[in-house]
Length: 224
Length: 303
Image 1 (cartoon, chains in turn brown, red):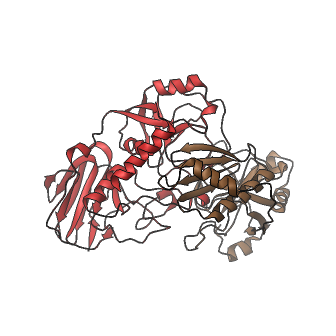
Image 2 (tube, chains in turn orange, brown):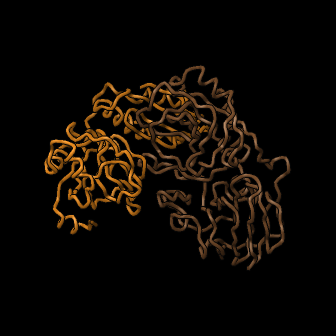
Image 3 (cartoon, chains in turn green, yellow):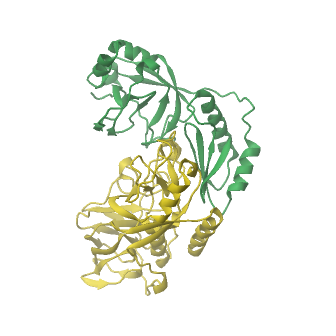
């Protein structure tokens, strides 16, 4: 854990400098551990791929005190066994909602069915959440379906669109501009103001996509 | 018992200190752009300092009071009228039922703050009334105010008003110095680039909203193209590939992958929020210790 001051009221802890499972696990361990300390005066704890950002009340703490507190209480050498949370998300991978399926297939030797199969076969880790409320960055996709972002982003990507950009995949929690390759759509709510937890996904969770038919998608409230 | 919006204003949002504790799922902090003017507006009414308020950007806004109350107005210098009578800013005023409150042209600064006694009675969303339009959160309906909107408050009667002492009323000038903490990512920038950054003058561009202020001037070179996305602090100075600094403000994205040369002191970001396009910006380095002292002094003054 490398601590670096960001601002008067915030610092960041780095766990490495590349995106990988081992670092993600350390971050999950530290993130849950810091949350468990329940430190009054810690305002935000924001995990990402290689770091955890912490902001605090400057009248309660200074950087050194908080750093020491965290170092004394977080032990990355101990193996903690987590109850794995796997969130299953049903996706309709039709070309009328997966706008880029045909193009991606034409760019590779893969058929549309193979792209769907490869995408839905893997268990993904939630590495970070950001960009929009509930927008979870999932990785890593199989290298056969690593596609760069569109050169010109779309002005409108519909809510629920399932997409790929480089080694990552994600779901647009609301309508938004976006430059990811769209391969399907889900009726699953990623950010629901009515729910206490708001977001069903958290950094450290795992996600599995299940292909469903158009009929099932529509029956679940999906919109074409 | 309410304030009614009479015209369709360009950009008026309900704000408070912001929404904290949800950034880990991508919800931005939001909140008033200028806490200095915000705190004074609440102080003038003896409101608790985190009371919600109207943040008014751009001219020409008309409200009608449907009951007696007391209001205060601070922030950008503007033409301000109660029943067509011109009034001063940085004061509180007693308002009678059917009074018309009008904000005309903004003369200097960017954002006017209008508070009512006790604040508006609006249900908070995730701990805050602050509107973030892109997230459709806060305010009456997650959006800016429009004609016909009703802002409820508890009516009250007063026999006094208050005024901020002249020495505390800011002048929004054409030159602004922002104090910067070179911190966690300064190693991505060579010393000569940091020196260039501190000795150049930048201009505030029109690319300036609640999310960020884009500046233009001497391009700053970064040794790397990008970083792995991580959380972004208020006041962070991103250097994108064109080298033109962007200061990230209240509605910034929660995570991002541009390298940052430093962080503008929070209390200086409030001044930046009032800077018009073409304001000349200079950056000045501040030590961590001094920065903490300055921040503490600001918040102690208002507490």
